[in-house]
Image 1 (cartoon, helix red, strand yellow):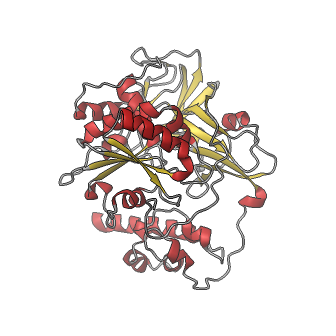
Image 2: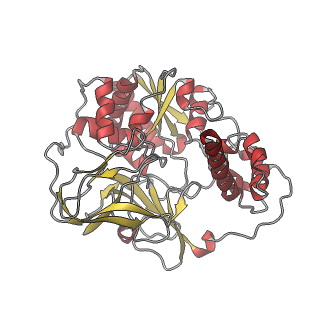
Length: 445
C-alpha cells in the first residue's frame, strides 16, 4: 500500500498537460518590475535609487527584519524608478522598475554547468548564504527559508522532508525540475541536512510521476544513500506540510503548531534547487520555473522565468491568451489566486499561470446547504466547513475560533465537493483573517 494522509482529501482531474515539456529559458524582457514584498513578513527596504546601474544578482533591497527576505535584480540595466506597481491580486506594492540593457552578471556568480557537490561551510554559514540570497519557499507560501531553518528554542529537527508531491492539477514545474536537475536537488538536500543537523531525509513524490521517482531513486541508491525517495498515493492536498508529514511519518502536527514540533522540517523541491544554486553557485533567487497551461492553451510549457517578467510574455510564448479566456490564475486551480491582468509581474511565489475559458471559470449559483456533510468528510484538517461558513456569515467569531477556523489550510476541498455549490472557502478565508485580527487585538490590549 502506498502511503498517504488518512483524513479527508480529494482527487480532482490531474490535467498535467506540461508533464513531458522540458524547461525552456524565457528571453529577457525589455523591462522588469520587481516588487519588494515577495515573501511572508516585512517588505524589503530598497538600497538602490533611480538611475543606478545594476547587474543580474545585484542586491536591490535588504530584508526588513528577521522574517523578511533580500530582493535581487534579475536583469542588468538601469533603475528607471522606484514606485508602486500593480500586483496580480489587484493591490499595489513598492517595486523597482529596471530598463534592461545587456546581460551582465555579478562576477561572484558561478554560471558554469559543473555540479558542485562538496561544501566546507558550517550549518550556520549555509543558513547565512541562504538568507543573503533571498531564498523563500517556492511551493507558494514564500516563507523566508532561513527562518524555517532556525527553529524556535525548545524545538529540534530530527528529519528533513522534501515536498516533491505537486498535487495541484496542471502544475508540473517541480516535476520538470526533478527530471532535469536531480543531482543538484539531492546536493541541495544534503546542504539543508547539514544546516539543520539531521542525518536522514525523505523525498515524497506522488506515483503519477513515476519517471521522477525512478530517476531520483537511482541517484540516491548510488550516491546519496542517506536520502530516501518515498512514492505516495495520488491525493490532494498531500503537498500541504501537515498532510505530507502525516503521510510520511504518521505524526500529527497539533493545532497552530509548527512542523518542527514533531521533529520535521519541510522544503519544496524548487526551494531545494534554489538553495543549491545559492550555496554552491553564489546565485541569488532571481528566476524560477513556471508552468503555463490551461484547457485551451495551445503550447503548455515549463518556463525558466526571470522575476519581474510581465505575465503576458509567458502567455505569448505558450501560444497566446485564447479569446475565450475568462480567468487567469497564479498557481494551481485549487489554491491559486486570480490575476487582475497580464501586465503584472511574475514573482517568487508564482509556480504556475493557468488560463481557463469563461465557460469553466464562472461560479454556479449557490443553493442552501443540505447538511450532507461531504465538506466535513473531505476536510484534511478535520474541520466543519459548513459551520465555519455560517459562523463567518453571521459574524459569530467566538464560535469560529472555538471550531479552529485558524487551522484551515485553504485547500478548497470543501468548495470543490459541495453539491450545493456554496463558496465555503471564500467565507472561511474571510472569517479566518477576521479571527486572527481579533486575536492580535486581544494580545495588544
